[in-house]
Length: 82
Image (tube, rainbow, N blue to C red; front, side, top):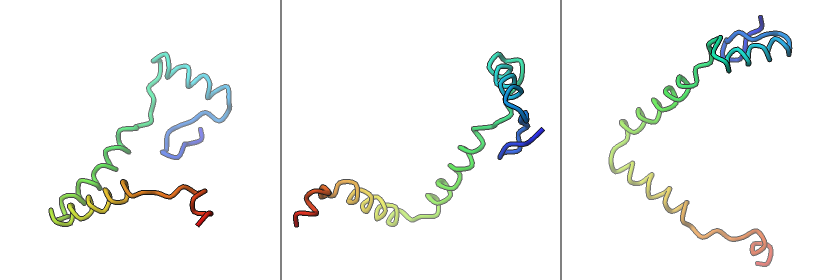
């Protein structure tokens, strides 16, 4: 059997894949993809970065983000006129 990008087993043909999806949907077979792993690994980086940053640096980042979010944007048609 071929393997997917995360190492899970997959049927080689379309009909075999359809049967596998049906078995997973009816509960006859367990789905071997672990979605929660990706989410938990991704959140570890943000937590580690937040712990390393000082309160002053966090405030600077937040201020910069707020300015970027709320700045007045010029519409594409107005840019061409000026």
